[in-house]
Length: 335
Image (tube, rainbow, N blue to C red; front, side):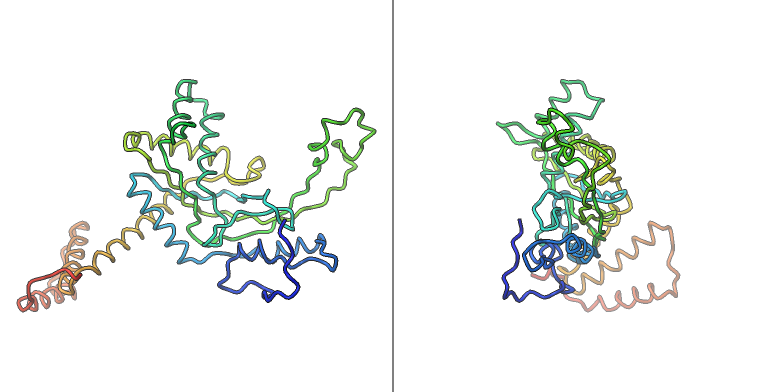
């Protein structure tokens, strides 16, 4: 369990604007009473106070672009998925409010670990995919996910939010905790009325944090080139698992179900291409940058089947640089 802070700590009473929400939520709980107990209202207030938008847009976008570039360079595929509703993971982690949350260590947002993504896809293949016979099922289990003797043929990356996440306060009311813990030991129900399912219980609501409709980047890449042809089937299994089973906690009540977001994926890929173009452009000499910019504009006109007007600003700029180019020295790439 997370221990109380030292009496003389210098922690602020609220998270600074640029602070790490996950670190604050996990390590700076400040709702203990005078006897170091956690009152119910303290739990609810702590969860409600942290139910805010979290994550830095630029950091999340950069992390998503780097991961997508890595996945692509490895011959894999990345795609954005959006949750239909709430998403939560790591509720079983110890915390004073009784429900934890898995936070990314540097980005400060909830995320899904690559091992969890792998386990989700494996569960779909092993238990739920009715299109497979036993031979095909075992082949995929051994090949895709590996055995004790050999690593699996595919790499499963962490699923990272591509934008700041809206956190919401939710609540659960566990009715049958003692039944699950002690039900098998009960001989006569009237000897243990607090442990059997019934309508006379008064469960105590337990608050917890959830992410509201987050958009996550999932990535899968082949570990071995020989298995690259199976990547579409692996990704298909991921899509089916996210749609039918859901990811994270409380999937039985609809949490964590996700659908692919093609527009989000296309936007991320477009930004990655623009970033690569800017980096390539910055490596050129000033003269080469001008020529490259004109080349891109001409190519845009050609693709749109548009002929620039002779008196347009673009043609005027082109004539200006053509005249200036007569005095340029031989082009060189900057070191």
